[in-house]
Image 1 (cartoon, rainbow, N blue to C red):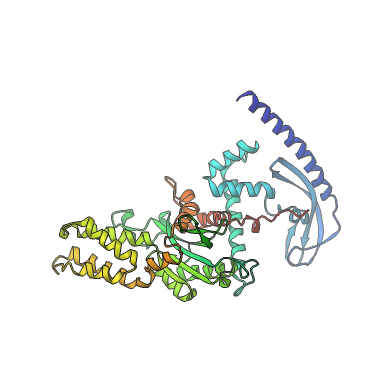
Image 2: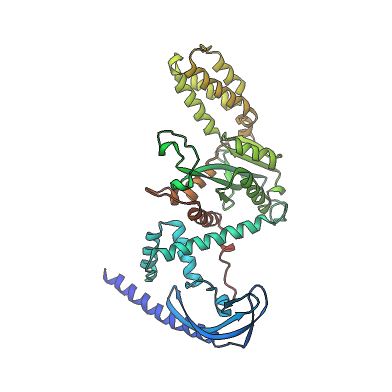
Length: 428
């Protein structure tokens, strides 16, 4: 340790001691008021004072003990300490500030690394990783409850700044990504590769939604530009039908129903377009351009044995795609006149013809570009990486849904810039 760091650490410890003494004084003073009766929290029943009991609370400055009144409600048949509720430490030994630090650190890093990080930054030793794990999961579960409460609000709500002179375009970009799971979470679920995990799936899909607005284009390139700070996200392990409810609720919460042109962007997954058709019928639907290009590349690779110039063949298909001329793509494939006996070529070719013809209206890329729309689902792919992969897909990680879902809830709120619904600003 260098001289400057030693001075820093000493000053930090001294400041913490001073702050802890002040904090202890305030908490002790708050605990002195112990009337004979108190209202039961939530139910409002009359409860009587049983005793004064001491509780130790760990804070960002260190541990502080307080002696406060403990009451019993005969109707609810349970005890409580009113001061614990006022201080935000009911049911926990961690202060709100330390709980928040544990939750944010645990959402960003593996739990043991988070524990050591907090110890390095604050000088606090949480002793065990389990304390941080429980806290992160509890805060994440609370985040899910708050998000669910927002979904309970029926229909559109007024959103200031949206309808009058606000953005002209809004995007609903949907995708899914796999999270590595313990075998118990994948029982009865077949995997994509029969050679792995005994044919069993090794992941569970997390569905991700990215919502943002666009007010204009880059003046130099003409490319669409996402409005800064306009992105918000949703995530869930739940089925597509439930995810659709989440997506519609976020659509209304953002006031997107007040924006002239909604756009739904996604890959070729059927569940995405079912949601778009049922819940966003007024939206323009766009298949991710780069996903479509991958289909053309894979098709060309498959058909290489019967192509005289694969590169030229693929470029011709790309040119058709850029114009939104999917019938020409189908015609080019059918013109190869593949022998019916070549099943390894005929079947994938027919599948690709169906892919492009069924998504014809979602592949009008020349028109989409002319209107200044995004045609790539990069924002939601980035969200899949940021919300899921960076935390859940590290080497050797395997999760339960119960363990990972609270972490994803915290990360989703954080990436949406909405930590304040979980941790409101202190009242002054």
